[in-house]
Picture 1 (cartoon, one colour):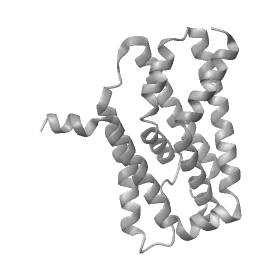
Picture 2 (cartoon, rainbow, N blue to C red):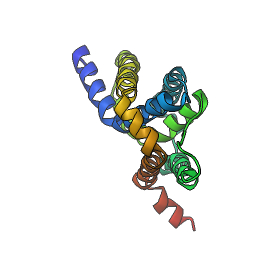
Picture 3 (cartoon, helix red, strand yellow):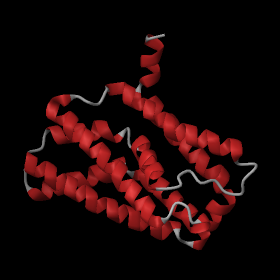
Length: 197
């Protein structure tokens, strides 16, 4: 497969599967500007840890080990859903809502938010040679840096941070509830649970 084709398809897949991640990153950077938590370096580190975890799982699954348990992986959607519900419950008592406080909580959030990416990555990696796979992963890492930079730029704008500061206690939890609900429904885990009941 030509290098330009590998890079082009990798870029398209990254953008399509990480639009929601960009929204989350922007909210995290905006919250960081207003509250100082989590710090920008922690956001970037957590984003990379979570993203790399899903890439590793996807590569292993694509290699035939089938470590990703089909629809059951959708249960991770409960994480952002729970964070969002918790945020709404405490929104009336606190001026701001911090959905993640450090590197590891950002990583967990990233992993939960990236559940729906696994299927796409697995299907893509299956058809790639080892060299093309390595090139794709390298481009993913570069694009993730671009994603973080753009989200930090937007999130650090006064209008955005002010919006998140004033409406963030309602806005951020609502976004995470929407993400968690979407992951759970899209994965088909509800249907699988109903069969086992």
